[in-house]
Image 1 (cartoon, rainbow, N blue to C red):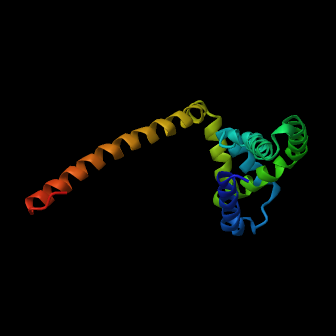
Image 2 (image 1 turned 90 degrees about the horizontal axis):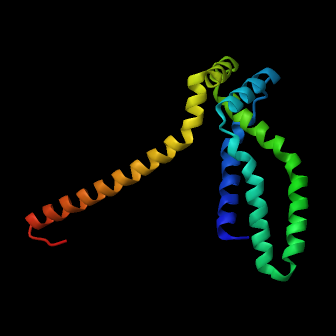
Length: 165
């Protein structure tokens, strides 16, 4: 297992441990259905289908490093396992629905779904990923600028005290 994969696995286990109390309540079918509608309308779960693909790729890479001569067999067996494990996807969907149900009432979830099904909600959903990415870049640029300014200010203040930094 690669360190990166092991780290993500440990983080996932920690996450499940931290949020498990949120799942302690039983939610009505209607409440979970409202959560499902809100999640689907907001498209926050769209990238989750890539998890199994990523895990399959990591599995292939780990096993191919162990025995490169068996790469065709590794591909075949991993693809078969991935198809079998795809049936477990509803478990993740239910957990995510419970996370949302724990934080929003059934009525709030209906309003969230209604908003995301509106034209402005659909636009927000479509634009969110690029806005988050662009915001992250803006934050990094700002951080670099502020870091340079802070370094200059500290050096200037130290120089005023007779110390070269």
